[in-house]
Length: 294
DNA sequence: CACTTGACCTGTCCGC
DNA sequence: TGCGGACAGGTCAAGT
Image 1 (tube, rainbow, N blue to C red):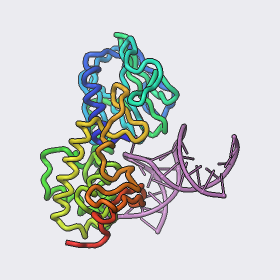
Image 2 (cartoon, protein in one colour; image 1 turned 135 degrees about the horizontal axis):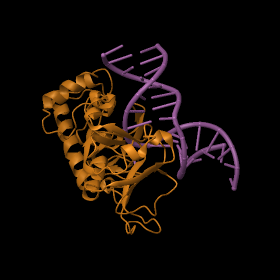
Image 3 (cartoon, helix red, strand yellow; image 1 turned 180 degrees about the vertical axis):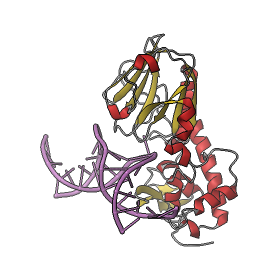
């Protein structure tokens, strides 16, 4: 699921609910979902108050008033859903736009707050995780040391974007976009959408993509990520926001999950699905050609 | 170092 | 209906 727009949507939602909440208790039922959960929960978590919710790349950081922070990666199927005391969000049966009662069979970690509200970390595939770290050490974890600038970071120039991509000049442009050490926040959905927007064949070698097209690509990435945040992100299967609601960006997607449909720029030409960089990849064969064309 | 592939998991869908 | 395989939003480690 979650690429930058989905994680950012969760961050915005949690920011409405969590600051000021005090942890009353926590529990988890799968050790890898909270690999360094403190044995002495009372000492490290109970009583801690939430200060803020931040995001870096696809990772959320919940800062506590104890000089510790919870860092959370949703990976493919993670969800972070807040429910207040009366469970008025999503109580009862799931609807088309919202998940149902929690906890459910995918719930891996639960945080109880002193006012009776709860935060659920659900993760069907168990790839995601929650960790508790001293706030000062958060920037020093391997992922943050290696990760590139956020795709939406306004300080990154076209030239810096192109230069960072050239570190992977012999791999496909799609593989380079998915490499978080090059630029952070893009995943499979927004890579395909951005490459379509910029009219670049995803399998083209980075070193063969003209600079002009790379500039267009960077613009496309940022435009698409911003629109995706505005529309609440993309729900392909599992993704929901902090209230358990699905995102609507895929209604506006041009190629992702649209194989067999007409390209909107080329009526009569069907979107195809293939594999690039080991991932399912959606292409308009007319917009995106596998050779150097300009 | 740059690059690719398989592993980590559960669940669903599709062909036989 | 059952069964095997492919596939699903993301990283990692280990291989070349």
